Structure formats: structure tokens, C-alpha cells
Amino acid sequence: MTTTTSPGPLNEECHCQRARHRHGTRACYVADRCRCAACTRANRRDAKLREYARTHGAPPPLVDAKPARDHCLDLMAAGMGCKTVAREAGLSKGVIQRLIWGNPDRGPSKRITRAHSDAILATGLRVTDRYRVDALGTIRRLQALSAVGWKHELMAAWLDMSPKNFSRLIGGRQGHVAAWRARRTVDLYEQHWQGPAGHPGPTARAAAEGWAPPLAWDDDALDDPDARPAPARRPGSHRDMHAYADLLDIGLGADEIAAHLGVSQMRARNTIQTRARRAA
Image 1 (spheres, rainbow, N blue to C red):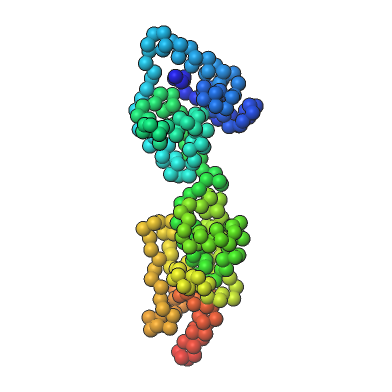
Image 2: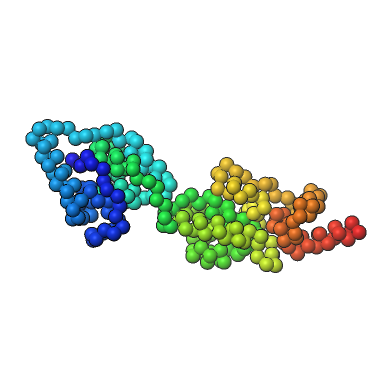
């Protein structure tokens, strides 16, 4: 049986062997071997309650496990691992595992102690650099950068990835990515969306895959799984000739027009000059 009191806050100044304990819980006393005053009191209190329950037949204070289980699943879907959820709640990993997956001989816990439920429901989302988040927005941004000419070897170095792992990521074969890489990709995209100097056009893979360039995307749609890029125009088509005039009227330069239409900057400049000569 566990204590019915709420666990204390995480203590960054803890002098125990392992850091980030949630003091005042028996789990901290047993699993982490914390012997601070709060954890020692919690362990003694639980021992007395277990003895009282044994001698008086008092039932443990159990509650429906579903709210706590749903909260755990939400935290894990947002990037927190099972062990992290347990640590933040001040509980053992086994409690969380049994709550979510159960034991081999039975399903997930149907009822848990009120103390465990309260501790889990009080645990907030804590996403740090090492947590993994959905990779969709990262993949779309990297593909768009590839579509305006940024080499994959360079982007892999930006993200501190091996070429093989980067190829898996940009190809959409990786569902999650470290949170710090997702944030760095957003920053890189905002800095380099116009393409490298002397834009040579899309990389070979971007051209083969038909990846959309940055100007085909609304910035707020890159992370939306239901959003789609604007349809690409075929360079040289009659519709494309009108597109040059439209984009020039908007005020875009040759480099931006090249990125939008998925052509090289040289081709864009030549087309603009040709149109200017014809207009003269």
C-alpha cells in the first residue's frame, strides 16, 4: 500500500545519489534509495498503513485507473518516455508499465491507489532536447530546402546526422525526430529557404521525387498533416510564362521566382530578360 498524501515537488538541489527525486513518496525511498527526511517519513507512514490494513482489514484507497492511464498516454504521445513519466510522477517505472500495458498474465490496471493517480495527473508535459516529436514538419522543410538546391551532405552536417540517417529522414522513412533537430530545422528553413547562392535548381533527388519548394507551402501549413503544397508548374509551359509576369507584378526577384517555380536562378533570369526584350 502507498501513502495517501501528495508527493512533494522535484528537488533540483537534492543531495541523494540520484537527482530529480520527488520527495515524500515511498517510491522514491524504495526505487531510488533516497533516505532524506521526507522520503523516510513517507516510507514509515506507508508501513504503518499497511500494518493497519493487515490487522483491521481496511481496503486500500483505490480509484479508477483510466484517467491516469489516458494522461500517461497523452504524455508519451507528446514525447515523454515511460521512464520519464515515472520519474516526473515520483513513481517506479513498474507502476506506469502495469498501468498502461499490464502484466503478461493480465491486462492493464483497472484500479490504482489514489496517491498514484494524483501523482500521475499532476505530472505535466516536459519536452526537452532528447525527446522525440513528430517528424512531418521537419521532413517537409528539409525536402523544400532540397528542392531549392541545398545539398543533402550539408544539411546532414547542419543536423549532426550521418548521410544514411539523413537520407532516411528526408525520405519520410522516420516517423519521429529529436526535439532539438526539429527546432534547428525550423531555424535553418527560415534562414535558407531562398536557396544557396548561384542556385543550381533542385537536387537530383528532389527533382526525381517531385518535392515541393518553400514557396509552394504556407509556413503555418508545414506541420499540418492535412495540408498540401500548391501544385507545381511545369517550366516552359504556357501557364508558366504567365506565372513569371504574375510573380514579377507581386514584386519577387529572379531568385525568389526560381525557388517558387522550381527552376534554376539562371533560367529565371534569362526568361525575365527575354520577356523584357520582347516587351520593349
